[in-house]
Amino acid sequence: MAQSRDGGARPAGGKRPTGKRLTGEGKRPAGRKRPHTKQRDGRKRPLTERRKLSARRLLRREVPSTVAVLAGADDFAAMQGYTSFPFDDHATYMRQVEGLLRDLAARGTHTSVALFDPVAYAEFCTESHLDPDAPASRTHYIADVAAAGTKVTYEGEPLARLLPRLVAEAEQQATWEYASALLTRGDCDSCGEDIGRAAFARATALLRRIIEAAGPGTHHLVCSIPAEGRTPLVAVLHTESRDDGLLHLGEAAALLFCTVLAAGIATERPGGVVLRSMRPDHRDTVRGWNLKDGGRLHPLTEAEVFAAYCTDARTGEPVPPEPDVDYCAGLPLED
Image (cartoon, rainbow, N blue to C red):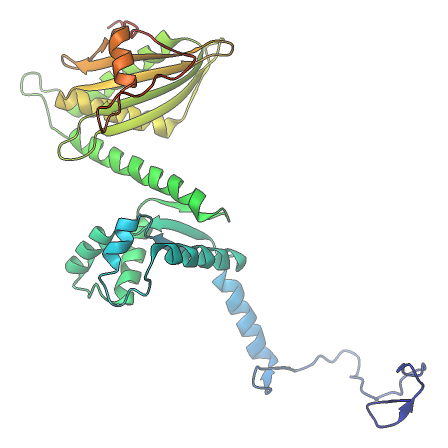
């Protein structure tokens, strides 16, 4: 026999005898709800307080969050100089950041990921009279600076896949800002025309002529302009021209491309444009132009295109040519 809760005996097998429960025996009257719920310490919590907590949790889901990441090992090393920074190695830090992002997503929190720039952080603390070796100062920087800059929405993807996209967008934004600053050069002394506006109009016309000369196909364009004291300004544009004349391209990428090209025209810096064209059942072709003579794109010869495309830009060492690629002279662009 098994013992029941009231001390009486039940038949072997442990099942309670069937039958109706007597009125009032462990049963609440119809229509009445349980007025309390248990807290962690065993005490009862009033129902109104429980409802407030539930509403607060729901409201918390509507508060967005920004997580600023030290993407590079150099940036991480710079933050290790602060005693309040709690991490010893970059790999552990990245795992903790990814865990935080997953936790926020599990709670239904809309989360954006930005880059944490130690140099900008130090400048922010100096200007704001904040102690850089304090967690609260890092919070202020993320809210006031990092969250206002380039960021991407976290959608559950691995951090290793998200960060390259974030870094690329941040670099594009920085390129656009720097190139735009080069266009604010005022008016021409001889004709009074706005130099930046005229250069942008010229760049837009050159891009249209390149696409028209390239014809139908998928095209990959790269514009590179030297910059003072930094790596060159580089803009990349993908376009698709159909046989019926329709053209597909990204507006933001086209704006960046024309802005960089216009910066080279306005500053009269020697730059270049490379075009790679892909067509079904054809070998890829690569062509190039030099920017000089007041904003004109001069076609490169076949040998010049080969030399430019098959040379490492950083080391100057030769790079083996790609298979199934033809290196051709640049097409003439009519003015």
